[in-house]
Length: 371
Image 1 (cartoon, helix red, strand yellow):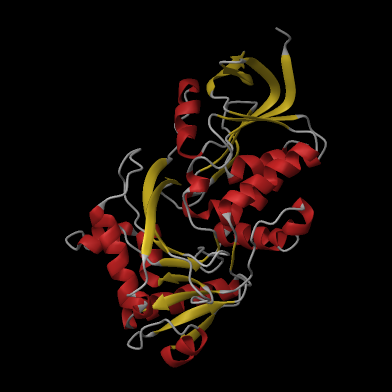
Image 2 (image 1 turned 180 degrees about the vertical axis):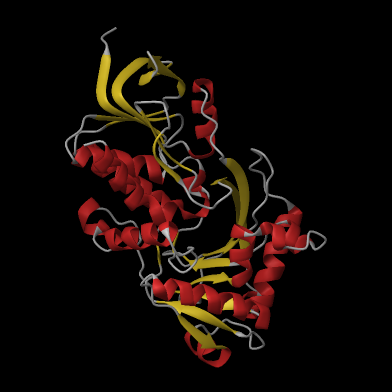
């Protein structure tokens, strides 16, 4: 068997791995992308498509998101592929005075970072989004928020990567990393060993298991999100929608009262209307190990929360549900860059619910790092 060599081996065929492969191949590097199943088979195929700025904490998180949003504006033309990008703006629903105080502080900090977010009273919020309940406090609005189809995004990145010469190998599981004198220099697969200058571990929740044999302990663990899918509807939801408790469930779950089922499951509203008319309604945030099953308790909690905030959806038919495992990190930030004390190994994982929003900037930054 001939020795297989590349500049870069990317592990993982989700939106992060395919973005890395695309930007690296576009920069002229020889790239092989290895995915144990098919493109977008994991988390990227079991999530919503939010490209939302106003959910990000000011600082590195928001800076990455804003840089990524700028890349998205030209991405459809650049990839020459319909990723169902819709720059429709986003709203975060505010239920009460306590949440209003939280969001006012959050918005003020974001403004200092250059993101424009408006705080709307309920009458104005309902004028823009008719489905909202009339007894809510209001909502924030950010014109920079958008949505995309995550599966088509990964497909678009992968197809463009192939056009630039990348070797895509779905159905090829990486079984280990090859190291020589402390430097990672390749990967092992059932189809043979592959040698390279750099290995990019972009396997989401599976990344810690890949790198642990090298003594690297990544603080990434799976957090399950359950989502409902409705029948196709006429235009019903004009924006991507979150609720303020989503931010608490995402960043400060310790502040939630665990006695309430809604809080115990980490439920926070996340709603979008897809290009085919169906609504994605989520979601839970549960630490359930690697269990991707949906649960009656989780789906009921998501539905009840959505009905309370969006009563217009009460009679809509649910046609299916799914769950995905988001790669959670304790500080809410992804792990992007060279692994400490392990030359040749690059990490691009831990994006949790921000992988869609941050995939272009992650791919480009990793590619720039490896020039």
